[in-house]
Length: 351
Image (cartoon, rainbow, N blue to C red):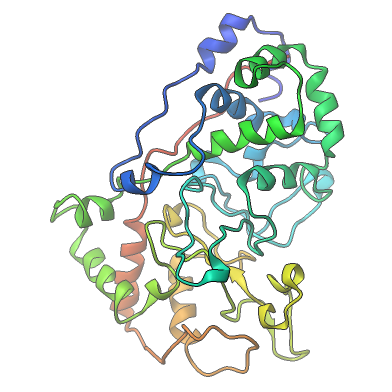
């Protein structure tokens, strides 16, 4: 998209391509979860954030944007096992989906877990902080925050839109974070086949196989023990054995422990949300499972006794699923694909 932006579009052309839009209503099934969110997006900031999200000039070498890893067509995730940053730097974790981050996903029944945390290891506690981390990371976009501010400040075309969004054309990292966060908050997903079946009274919205999978998900297979709530995530951290190497008795990635330094957190990762999960294989924090069926089969055996540190007590079992039950669970997971979050890059960017 940088090539398309190389010429200097007129302001009217920019604004026709990326207008200020009224905030969209949450898609069906999501209304109650988004109506009282603490940070309602501001339309002018959403427009600015959309440009910034897709603008490759926010990377050190102008090669990557936020959307390079959080791709709209894959529910703002990607289909590679791990992310690749500037200069071919290869990460160690899968890019998670950004849909439905505006609404709280933590289930607040345990006092110490009442704060919503971001990233697989929960290293930050606000969306405004989260959106800046990949920009500055040396293995991702590689542009430190002062350089980001200096680069954007040198682009005169951006100044009117910062002024419109914040009342001043002075560009700060806080305003960049606010605009990016407001754009991300508008990426809502709902009106899935499951929503229409469960909440809309449409008996045929899901196939009979997916309906059977729903019953398995919430009962026999106990998936909802961790994948709970509207977004199918409890927002907490669990060790399920992914990345455990039994020979040296270590985790390839220690997960939450690197943040908390609590031994009880070794190997724990945040429960991923399952909305639109079929659109961004492969799965798990390291992208080590290629298909949804692989994931279900993994959990079908993960319940067996294994000497894994901090193994989640929610892996109760064994609960052995048949081949047809695995098929039904996969059909149910595919029925969580929704709409409302879709987008495509702007054609033109401020210069």
